[in-house]
Length: 176
Image (cartoon, helix red, strand yellow):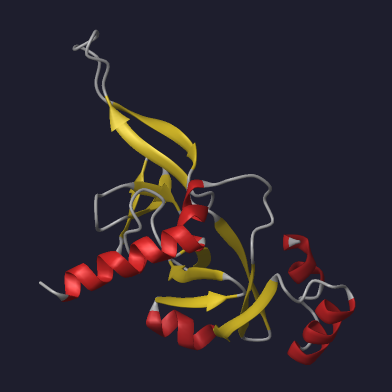
């Protein structure tokens, strides 16, 4: 699917829409905004298809991932972007969980208590946050939703139960 948007990079927006409809891929590739607007905003959150996502512009590159942190649904739109272990990561503002922008890999730093003389090092938790492909065509930014098979933990907050949990937490926060 990701290759799909790249193949049409030389076509106009109308040609891309026609081509996606002809190939049955219109449900996966979405126009999300103008490149200049997203660069200026640095980040946007939106719903495309059935997913709540964020699109981030950082150091000349566009990234997209599910909007809510896999751990407890924290708002990644407000997360800091930092480099850890040579990877650009977004840090969830809720509990400080770290995910790579490119792969959605969860990482953490720890030391082995049986080897106290060894310094702490970075470990991978594997892919935790679903990421989506971002493509620029004629000054427009498109996101192709991930078609990676299997369950990725951030999928929880894209389903009915996870969304209800987020609504409940928001309502409780509003009552404070």
